[in-house]
Image (tube, rainbow, N blue to C red):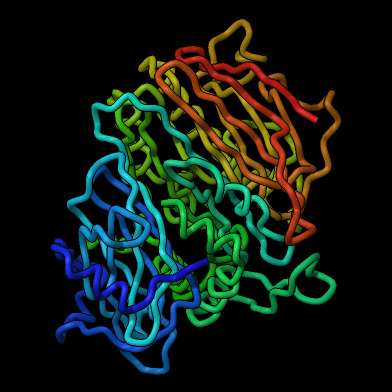
Length: 491
C-alpha cells in the first residue's frame, strides 16, 4: 500500500491542528523530558481502538536500536492527510517495547478519520478509524467478532475478509495469541517456535502474530476492542492448577496492553472490563472472565466475574436504555455437554472452565435479567473453537427449546479464526436450547443491528492457504423483543 512521505506530512501539518495529550497512565514516566521525534521503523503496522463519540486511541510501534525515541501522530479527515485535525509527538522507549499510544479527543461523532505516524526515519502506513454515534442516534450498526487465532494452525483468512466489511467495530474475544510454541509436527501450517512465559517472550509472540499481513490490515482499517482469555497468559491459568507465577501473569497482561490500542486506567492498570454505548441502538459490555475468578484451590467462593464486576454488569443491564444489550465475553454460557472446549489438549469431560463450572453465577445473572424484564440481551462468546447459537435462561431445564418459555437472552459463539476444530456430538445428545452447532468450520461472525432486528452471520474461511476464501454459512435473524431467532443455513 502507498505510504505518505515525510515531506507530505510536514506540509499537511501546516494546517491548524489541535494538540492531543498522552494520558498520564501511559506516558508519565517517559515525559520527564520534552518529547521529540526520533529514529525508528514502523514494521508492525498501525491500529486504533476504544472509540468513543469524541475520542479514539491510536497505536503503533517503533523498532530502533536507541533506548528512547518518539514519533508524531497525524490525524486527518481525509486519506491524503491534508485536512489535519490533530497532531501529537509521543515518546517511547525500551520500557514499553517501543509502543506508541495517544488518546485523541475533540473528534466528531459517527465520523471516519485517517492517521499516520512519522519518525525521524520512516512514515507508517495510513490507517482509518471511526468514532461512535452520538447517544441519541438510532442509526444501524455492524460489529464483527472472533477469537482463537492460533498462528501455527492456519492463515488469517477471516481477517482478510473482514478488512472489506463495513464495520463500526471489530471485537477480539480472547486468545489473540497462544503462549505455546507450534513448531515441527505441532505446526499445522506455520512455524511458531516461541514458548511465552516472561515479558520478553510474550513481546516476541505478539510481534510474530502481527507479522501476519491480514491481521495488520484488519488493525489498519477498523477500530477494535480486545478482551483477553487464557492463552494471553497460559492455558486455563485461572484454575490455579498450578497457578502461574505472579510475574508471568503480570507480564502477559503488560504485553497485551503494549501491543493493543488500549489505554491503561490510572487507578487499575490491568482493568479491561468496561461499557461502550453506540447511540440508542446498542450498549456493549466487555467482560474479564480470568482476572477475577475465584474458587479454585484458593478457599474463596466460586465466582467467574468476581463480586464487583458481576454487580457492575447486573446494574448496567438493568439501567440500560439502548435497544440491544451486547455482552462480549470469553467462555460458553449455555450448558451444551462436551465440557471444556477451549483447548484441544484438555479433557472434554472437564466443564469447570466455562460458565458450566459456575452455575450459581450463571443462574444469578440470567435470573436478574429475567426478574428485571431486560429485553434484547445478547452474549457474544469465544474460546470454544465451534460455532454455536444458544437460547439462555436461569433454569435451562424449564426453558426447553424456548418455544413454550421465553428465553432470558441469546448467545452467539463465533467459532475460531484458526484453532483446531471439534468433532460434532451425536445430535441426540444435544440439549434443546442449542439451536446450531458447527465444530468443523473456522472463521468469524458479523452482527448487524438496528432498532427493529439483529442479524448475525457466521463466515467460514479456508485457513489452509494464504489465498483461501470465505463464505457465509449461517444467518440468524432476531427481532427486537423476541429473545429468540430464526435460522437460515447456506451451502
